[in-house]
Image (cartoon, rainbow, N blue to C red; front, side, top):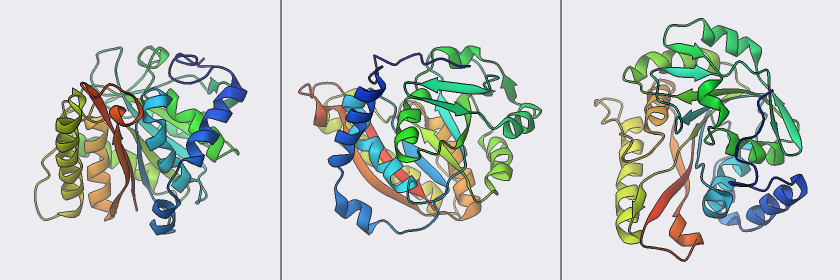
Length: 270
């Protein structure tokens, strides 16, 4: 079992306090955004992964929309923050625990992907990684039946199309979705961060919708989860998905310090 690494730091370690915090974040959602978002089965979801007091007000939009559809399996791509490696790392642990819930891993997907070149099966990149773990309490709250998960830490990648093809085969299942965990710019002044992040979001959107042109892929300076976003871009292009930005904000919107902020977005594609 993979034990939580950042409970008590990024989010409350007490399950009751954790649920109460997500309820509070949920109560702050703008209902107009939810209402105007089409009721359809989205295939790709993007959410941030900072501490809940910073990125939680953005992340809840992603999972509020996900809760409207029947999801049984979730592949989660999270960038590596603690270990340097090449390729994509699957976790061998069959279960992941968070305060108040235990998620089961989809062992079929683990076996299928683990046999492919470019994928490694190792718990080392997962042990202290927060980018995937912080998504799970939101999943437990909005999808209380607890879908099976396939946690994947993304290392250094250059052949994004290769990984997109491998994941797309699994995503053919109508009840399987992809979550890409990423923040945007890091530690820029508030105004500059807003401008830079707006350009990044536009670039991501154009990469997906302008299928006749070669995509201008993102780099880790634009988003720490850029490699995961690039993989998702090729999946979205092939499946002809439409990206919808639900919410953008940065840490300066939820904290007093606006001198060095981190950007966050919530987006769905379907």
